[in-house]
Length: 242
Image 1: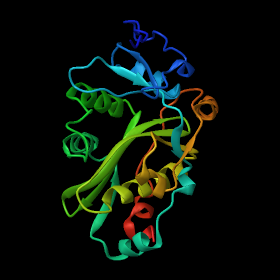
Image 2: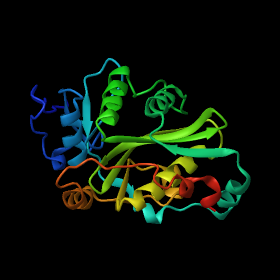
Image 3: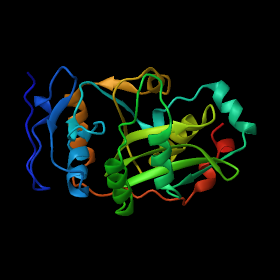
């Protein structure tokens, strides 16, 4: 029988140390609480994130290892870079956060019977965005939203949450544009959460949780919202990524 700590009702109730997370399932740390902005920001700055399905209590995770990349080290293949020279896409930042998260929730994914982005979670991250903690990158073909990514920015770290692609390559362009924007702001770490083959092709690599937490201690203290803007949006367009 798995026994998990129950989080206190107060939004400032402490999380258990991430080192106490289960090995199987990897990283499961606690349950309960809520998705209030203060609790979410404290969670991410501590190397913890929520992940659960509809009908379950809120589950909190801190897996070991953690899949990360430095924004300056993102890898794009030569073939993909060449394809951007004549693609019909444009990139924007924070123009339609709600649409990006809704697309991430709605898009079918191989091997998944449903989405973990519940209406409750959607509302929580839209509120985080309103408060300046959560950000999105959008990829459009004409007026149609065809790709995007969203996540949470704290200090000099960014925590990727989900991305979607309605055209082959648009999510890859979204993450490339995000990394360029993060580099402009001095962000040193992009968290991809759990290991995946797709992230590995982009230069993400697993690091031990203890090393990840040590980096967050330096990058997220004090916890201040990352400011992403379109101050140099031209540099994020596909033809500039080649």
